[in-house]
Image (cartoon, rainbow, N blue to C red; front, side, top):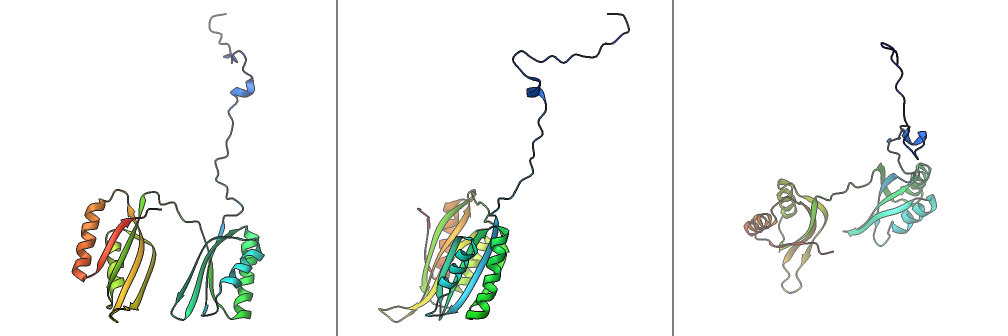
Length: 211
């Protein structure tokens, strides 16, 4: 090789390897939505003994959407249904048209809007809280305020007022499912909660959800 003359570097492909294997591959990392990731939350209301369940679920099936989660409750004289559905964009749009027609023709009270999937809450521990007490105004607010102040979410709730069969006393009952951050000291939280309940004269328990 002559002094001062530079030869281009040669690229040597190892034995048993093709040149294609050494070619950089471009990867598309852009997240793509699945065709059924459109979510619609529906709330329907009517007066007992009628129920909006049959009418709403029929429209969901006819539209081609899929029912993901639903709740039915009778509160006072009214029946409510909450339903979360998924489907393609066209199917959800078709369902929205059906709901507009259903509200107009059958007199149901309906509220619906586009939403998204629930986020995974792997850092929250599910616990069940049950409270019984003599009924008085403000109990539910005070319970909600306690958990909110602790940074604890209420995932589900059922509370009611009833008259005790044995004595005729007006009673309050509540069952809550809460999400406790996994780094929270459970024993200390339970002590604080029971002390809170003792101050308000509430009979309560807090146990981990076993299923």
